[in-house]
Length: 101
Image (cartoon, rainbow, N blue to C red; front, side, top):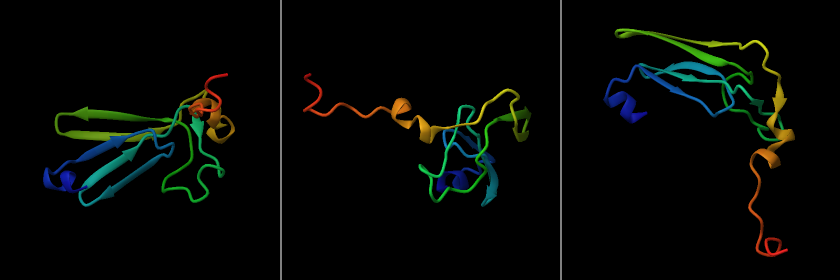
């Protein structure tokens, strides 16, 4: 946040938060891209962070020093919860006692 303020950054775009959020803070616009794969359910986020739990993408348009950013729906995406497959998506390393079987 300090670097964005110091260098007068106009836009910070990010992803991998599994939340769609578009807000301004201290003169900078922050756009969190939604996931295109999984929603995060209550098992993994009992106190969800700000933003919307939805699938989609961000459409950015740049023209010289002017920009637009819009969080959009992507037709055909199916809503799956990462909670249901978290062990497959992020497998835990084998422990020493099970790795030599």
